[in-house]
Image (tube, rainbow, N blue to C red):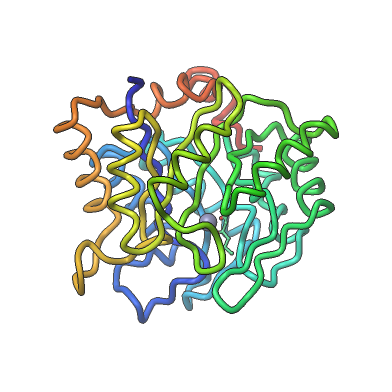
Length: 282
Ligand code: KMH
Ligand code: ZN
């Protein structure tokens, strides 16, 4: 099996500072998270940003500062969120792509999100994809429901998306597909040849989904965006969540991918090229 890519989503948009003391609010805090999760075995970081008061922002200057701090502290693959927070405009969500991160998420359809609706109509998805193409950013397809795969295939037929791609199954969002082994297997079987995939189980589904993915040959996303607990009632840090997945992988005989190995597995440019380009920062 390929080495395991561990992606970390440390911040998210919904988590509030009163829920956990471990939420990275400032760019400096995000830099420190990057250093710690790299040490624990992560190879990719999924980035949302906060204002100093903890509120969510997709401000380009804030993303630039966060990107700089992450780069100063690690060679992790940097993946920006284009999902942002519920209620952001598509333009706000896509704005940080101007910084040319190596990857960014593309949620492949609208989904109920608790009592709210995370809107990803075809015009929104097309618009975000066009901005990704414009800035040379590789998508990670976020699949919250099985129909999202059908939507991605429609975007392929429209000529906006090529396959194979890297796909992240986000399972267990209230309003999306349940986090079950049967659902995960069904989704993986529906992927076109050559795709790589990871799973992000929400809440207490994070650990069992990660364990199943390690055994299946997939990859894993953990982090406080999806789950703030290490165990019942005990808050987690991001690095603890990574270290636990790395330990399980080791027990199962699955090697852990470092960032450069992960770039090769995902067919991203190598770090040497990136350094030559000034780490792609304009
Ligand atoms: N905050 C969620 C509404 C992404 O980052 O691309 C969307 C989200 C997905 O977090
Ligand atoms: Zn996110």
